[in-house]
Every structure is written in C-alpha cells, then in structure tokens.
Length: 196
Image 1 (spheres, rainbow, N blue to C red):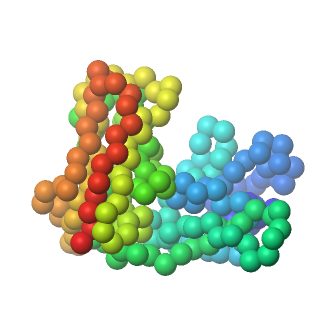
Image 2: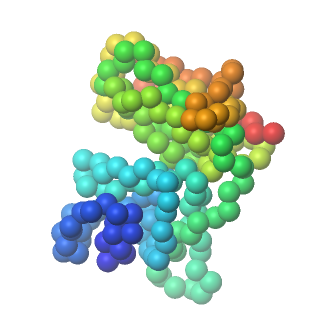
Image 3: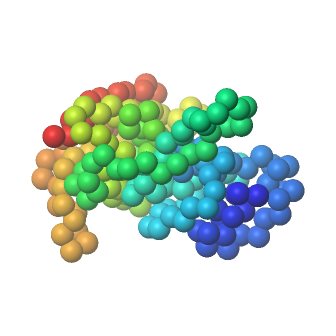
C-alpha cells in the first residue's frame, strides 16, 4: 500500500491496483536503496524511472537514504529514512560523454550506494553527486551490467568539482574519468574520490 502512496505523492499518475503490485512484486528504490517500509514522505526535484520488471527507481540527488535498525527486537524490516547530507549540494558533479557507443550499461556506485545506470544513447547526464559523498575519501565504482553487449566508441563518465552558473555547468578538470569502449573487458573498476 505504501508503494501506491509514494507513487501518488510523486504525481506519477499511474493507476495500479494493490493486487497488481503484490502479484508482480514491484519494488520501489530511492537512490538505489530498497524503500520498503518508507511512509509519509514527499520528495521534490527527483527523476523517476520504471525498469523492465516494473520496479520504480527514484533518483533523488538532494536526499541521502539510510536504513535504520528498529529500537526493539522485532522481525519487521527496518524502514529507510532520509539522513542529513554530509557534503553540500552543487559542488561535485557526474557528467557523461557518449562518443558513439552502443549497448553499454554501466552502474555507478558511490560508497556502495547505487547512484545511476548510464546507458549508451542516452542524452548527456549532468548529476549533482554531493548527496552521495562524505568529507574525505569516497569510493566510486563503475560496474558494467551483466548481459549488456557493448560496441562502438567510448562511453565516458567524468566526476569532479564544478559550479552551476545560470544553468551551465563549469567543470575545469575532472578529478577522475572512466572510459569504456566495446572492445574493453566487462571489469568492475573502483577508484578513490577525495572531497576536501
């Protein structure tokens, strides 16, 4: 029932019956975290996508989602809650650059939390990653998704400091860049991203 409430709150305009949700075992994820049990919360400035299985993925860059343990010993799952942001928004960015790749799907994780799937052919993505970062050392993982059939030229993902100046992102030199072509092996790569 909370999934219907969340969908209505976000204004998705979907009409789904509770029995359809239960039958298909549709899940709702917020910033890659299973949002089962989340209730009575409204997001603003988010992206919503629905995958091939009907699962709802909410990309909410202004929010950090954490699962808390219940105070009492119970078998009920812990409900996700919005936690305070450790790094200010609008200073650290992820930017994609598709040089003519095809069939690539790369999942980006920061400190173990799924941030976004990057796909060949998508429009350029400019994403504020501040809500996923903490001060000091962060681990960024680029994970090619199994079953994708990459070909063509490079798909590049850049991370670094920048500023949004009247709707235009200014990023001088990315702190780190990831590039994968169709000929590259499907290996996961983790790198350190330091926030001062």
